[in-house]
Image 1 (cartoon, rainbow, N blue to C red):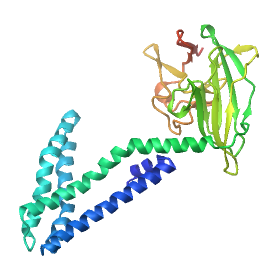
Image 2 (image 1 turned 180 degrees about the horizontal axis):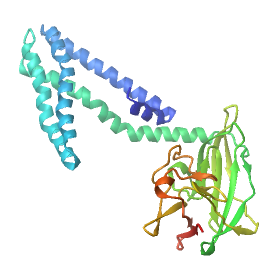
Image 3 (image 1 turned 90 degrees about the vertical axis):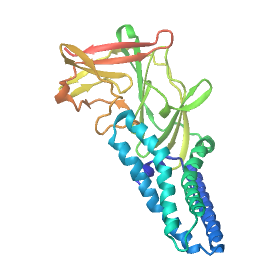
Image 4 (image 1 turned 30 degrees about the vertical axis):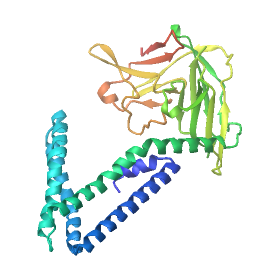
Length: 351
């Protein structure tokens, strides 16, 4: 199986994999039944051997069609290549497909009529097109069934206090942007966080599919940051203990009454150190070129070793492109505020 198909299957929830396996088995059984009935029809006419010849000709016919369509299309770049692909698919592909089957039927002994050869070609084409059509039609139902099943399974997990160590909240002054509050939830060894949900509008939603600059992950540790008056919503965290048992825990931000200090960045030649971990959505480093600052989105292109899930800018952050961009000259922190204020930016410049 190609590697990309293995990745697609592995990304599916367990129930979805089972459902797709059942659908695939049903399609295989249906295809075998169609082929068996078709063969019996030709055997009854005394042309069973000829049916085998033409049916096996479907394999070289498919290879010829793929080569005739994909090859020229890949040789042309841009939108013209797409136009060539569809033109060949709609015009040349049917002619070649049916032409190879008609030729095989004419060469077979006993010879098949053009109608019989065309029948075999048409049924073979149906067997090729039916699975993609069925999988496309069933994508939404399978997704919904799997999602509802997974939601019910998560809801049935027993509740327990979150095992993470909740560090004391810290508060930092960010000029006109207000006060940034940060708190870290550190997981004990062996605990595996599987899913984090946030409550929005009375509904729980997976934070992995949302923009959530107030939350980032580093392994199984969670780091929160928010401004006064823009506290994160209640969280529901699904996790497994060292024995592999599944649990769920609720977590809500507690008011932080500690005084605010300065937000100080530690500058290094190869990067910088933030006083607290922040989401990559919040942080944009900058370097000097042509006498002005150029900013880099950290979520635009991930560096080597980074991944989409572990999205914290931790202490010791290192710029891989330091030799090209030069040392980080500034860090822009974007602070999301409730409407109508919107985002506020706080710039820290290296001196």
